[in-house]
Length: 366
Image (cartoon, rainbow, N blue to C red; front, side):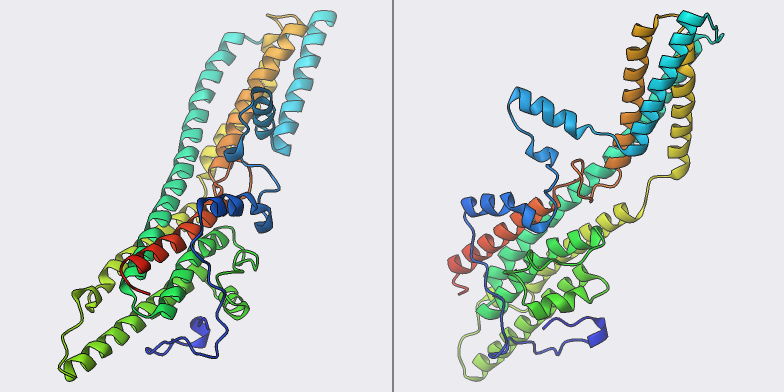
């Protein structure tokens, strides 16, 4: 069973009880199984919206898909629509009523240059956050595979090894749930945890660290069992166990656990630290100022059927750049611009069991 902080620490001599209902083992998955599992992400509730990672390859389908992916938020669309109304009204009043607004287009071109620099900086910072998040999930992927390989080789007890590998596969799912401020889902944990373990984890304040604590308890339980076996063999006059099961092998696993914890902390830092509001507010104030004054300046230079598409296109570029920066700054959601966390977690789960199975069979761990 899983023990949270409210339940007290586990006893040091952890062992799988014979009468305990253990979750169904997840066998090593082939590449075909990985594709089938990652293609059924609708079970996990996040692919109702197609991700940009699944973009079609055909020209027409690709263009339609990317146009859909460029959709605007409601408030951004309202600003763009208002800009369209303003430029239409200003152009028609100038062309048919003779109104002059006495605004110089060159001044607005200068303002647009300054605004473009602000938007470029904001988009660059947002993409840096998005890429850092992807890099941290790469660390989780590599550390999980390496930890599963070490567990498969170094654990002598098959039941304890299978338990540790299953919890290694649970960690990415727990990290995803924490970043999205949700709980572990039964569909995701069907082959990894028992219902009692799932309920206990979901009652924890911090699920990923509960998983890490479980893996540490299993490692120390294995260390104690191997140490007792070594002492027993020494007492019987037998040869010492090979260096493979020496009590210091846990340092290799501890390094992988530290990598998982550090990557988790980095992801939580990104999720809990928004971009500076003052910078975003300044950019949006300049955007609104430019959107509602540029139509008054451009109507003196172009007729209405040229001024309207020019102003609307420039307004769309400006607003979409700001909208994209806002979406990229929070990369752990379920939108088309966010990281495909379900796909990443499913692939980590498949590879973890495959690596552990190969390591255990090759080194005679089973």
